[in-house]
Amino acid sequence: MMSSVSGSWEPDWRDGDNGGGAMLSLVYICAQKVVSDHASLRRALGSIPRELYPPLFTAAFLGGKTLVLQDLVQRWPFPILRFQELLGVRPGQIHLHFTWESTQTVILGIVAYLGDAISRDNWGSKERGRRLRLLDMTGTHNSILEQSPGTKSTLSRTVTLAKACIELSRRRRSEATQAAKRRRGHGNSALVPPNPLDSVYVEVRVDLFVNSTSYSVLREALQASVHGPMRLRCRDLRAKELSLQRTVALLELLEPAGVRQIDLSFNNLGLEGLNALLPAMAKFSSLRSLKLPYSNVDVRRLTPDMEDALRKFAALVGQLKSLKELNLGSSRLSGRLRQVLGGIQEPLESLELAFCFLLPPDLYFLTQSLHAPALKKVDLSGTNLSELLLPPLQQLLAAASSSLLHLDVMECRLTDSALSALAPALWRCSRLRYLGLFSNPLSSQGLRTLLQNCLRLRELRLVVYPYPVDCCGEGPDWGDFYGAPTDGFIDQQKLARFSAELQETLARVERTDVVWTTDLCLHRNLDYLNL
Image 1 (cartoon, one colour):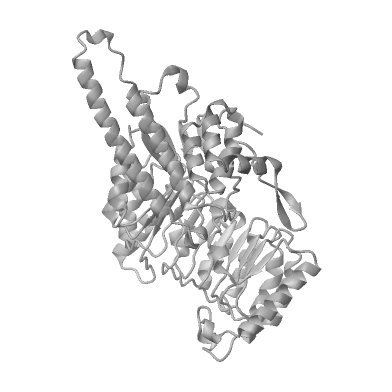
Image 2: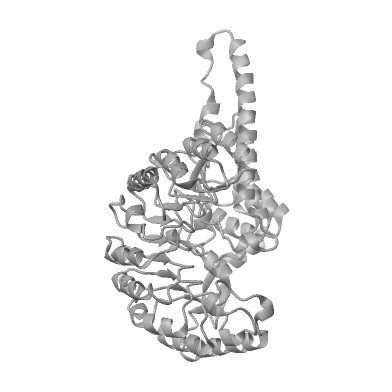
């Protein structure tokens, strides 16, 4: 299918399943052949129907044909170029074919495209209707790929885009200065056409990642992009280890429309710092996800002034009317969850409370809150669920059973008996897709029982399970141990046999659609906004 507006097609580079292997489509095979001969394709680009550009782009991008890719971008015949549509990537899907070189080539292609339009005044009325106006690079970030050989992180992409934006802005200022001189020397200014450079721009929608090293260049780029030829529009912002002043300055430069997630990790701002920061987020009317892990928030023992600060924090978060996800990971919230969430009037769908020192009253409150029936994702990792918190967790699962898709209870000291007690409530969560159990002291037999019971969860697709305790050698006492045993404590042969047994069981019951793994990389790729 082809859209005349976006130039998108329904990528059929993989058609169906044939005996467990993906089968390349005929269109994609033909496109691969065409892009393999850059010289011939370049000569023919002027006469190729525009409907062929999307499959050629897909084949060139995934095949790393950078010269072809740059030519295609510079000649792109549609107003919109969307990565996610052209590459056939569903939200949250792992795509092992993304390469940094291809992504960088697209950016360089846009730079060359805009540079040509600026220097040659090549943006006439006849061309404007079919010229590229929007490059959408969102939705292709993948934490697994960033740790793989030959790939680079979102930070590298952010810096490359920022430098390109600054370079193009400077170039246009230079061209504008030359144009002004020509106007002054023209004589009759009434005969001089308006400066066409103001209409030469491409909007780039992107997910940005910034830290203390890249802050200055991104800030300059955002300032330059307001009226520049490359206009950066942020969808998801990840800012790590930035000061309060820098974070506020960055938020003030972002366009309010379109920002859906702000992730401020390791900012160490504390409650008062967050209260100074949150008003800068009020302009983001579409903000759905706010992540504040490792913010140095401790509300366990509050002075009267800190009580006021907690009430203010709750009120400020409550002003984010579109908010659906809140991550307060590694905050010390013992007994205070009711006050922390007290200002939120609309139900949250994702709540990440990993390592938050929760107490039974916190989970009992959550069970009875307006959020429980709406929760799609819950992360309680690092909470001791083996004793007093087990009953309220059972109630929480029952309350969220019709909505819950993703449950993380890693490093929660869950034993076979605790998991058995939790099982009836867990099996009621019929929509559950992901279950994270890594670093819990479960035995091989406990995991076998879990697998058999999980077969009734027809939508379950991923289970991250722990190393069974009977596959581990002499090591720390699990009763006092948080985290996974080190490689030196794991009997690799026993673990391999057990893993093979699980896969055989899944094959025998025809549930190979479910991935059972100890690989945390698969877990890191999951996100509420992609559920």
